[in-house]
Image (cartoon, rainbow, N blue to C red; front, side, top):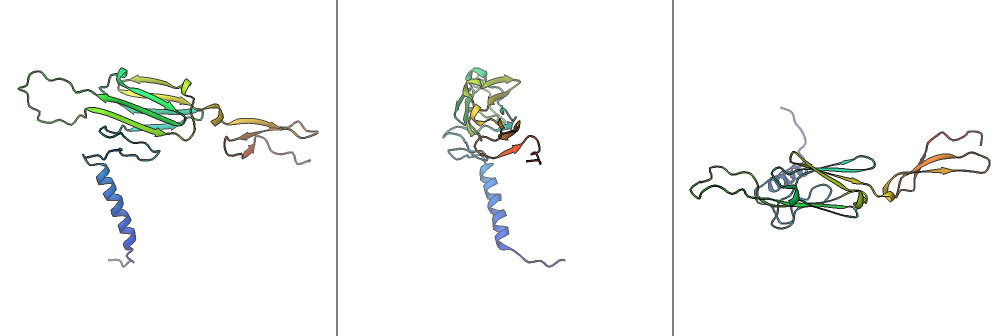
Length: 181
């Protein structure tokens, strides 16, 4: 048996995390949805939609699993840096009223997810594809949010290119500076 110092606040934080997970994973979801990293959530009366979001450098690729949903019933909207995906899982009609459910776990009803992306996107260039129950949305970054190369020239030299990140004002040299002056 080892003797160690007990930190009551460390245990309280882990208990709080455990309670948050328990409430977020419960059957009863609060209006406003799960939220999570990147913001977003569900509207009152609808369930949240799990997303995978990747940064490809020139844009973002968002994937969502929506099996059994008709692609015509999915609505995608883009405004600035915000993507909203909504739709509904329709209940399949059963033959005859005599049937009784023994187990019913598939979700039915409306779903919605709004996610805020790190930069603004080009809404006109956004594309969506639905294949094998997976919705893939490709959002190109807006021209103002992309990295631009700017040539810096001084008197008497040819100049060098410097990569400038949009919004930071900081740059890195594409080639080492000339030691001769």
